[in-house]
Amino acid sequence: MPVSVALAGPQGSGKTTLFDALTRGRGADGVGMVDVPDERLDRLAAAVNPKKVVPAQIRLVDAPPGSPAQRIAAAREADVVLLVLRCFGADPDPAGDLDSITLDMVVTDLATVERRQEALAREMRGGHKDAAVEAETLERAKAHLDAGLPLRTMELEPERRAHLHSIFAVSAKPAVIVANVADPSSPPLTLAAGLPVLQLSAQLEKELSELEPAEADEMREGFGLRESGLDAVARAAWNAGGLITYFTAGEPEARAWTVERDAPAPVAAGRIHSDFEKHFIRAEVTSVDELVGAGSMEALRAAGKLRVEGRDYPVQDGDVVFFRVGR
Image (cartoon, rainbow, N blue to C red; front, top):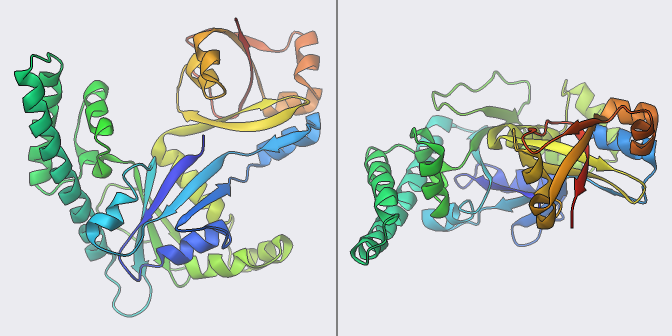
């Protein structure tokens, strides 16, 4: 399943230029699927020579122009939101733009919470015991929103935070600020927002996306850039969303899979197929370097070099895993 990333920002922020750059102009109706480059997957594919190579993917959504509610709606089902701020041109006001986006999110969530509170009141009158716990969470959430604060800054226990996920609270989403600059060597943007900041030039990235890869790399090096905009966005989205990438590799397919950080092995297996989580037996684990050196999982298995891990093993970023499952 691809990681869903939404671009949100005021008109003129350059978010559509960034969308076009990341999708290489292949998006349609504000939605584009983007393969995530990963040199580890490239090395695995070169070592095991699979019939098919499947990278991790991002489903990128460009919020459409329109009312604040319409602009925010695109982010409701995203895993991570990129808040694109204009830091170029005449009189840029990134702090003001961020306050405006945040307010739109807060107002949207406040309306959502109030509608859910009305439904919960009916459920509690009907004798639903679990409704009282959710109602308490939403009362706390409403007070936080009334103070103009996004829900991502609200301290909640994991089980209570699930109540916010169930109503698709947009201000509770992991977020990254994208400082869209004219010159990528501009001084770093500093904002007291408590969010990670990714600085890039959407216009430059768009121009680079239209070049041949070798030419783009040479031009990027001339600007002192160590990675592409897509690499930077993927890294920022994975970090903000608490995600990792693990791999499966064999003759049929070498593939990158995305899962939450510290997810236990059965949950990671469930990303491949829901039955794998239900019927999980054990995980056989190695690293990219070890597999590349050996040439195959079978060679590592024969040499007794695969680690055998059980249900409680938290899958790590970069693990190469073979799952043993029952029937």
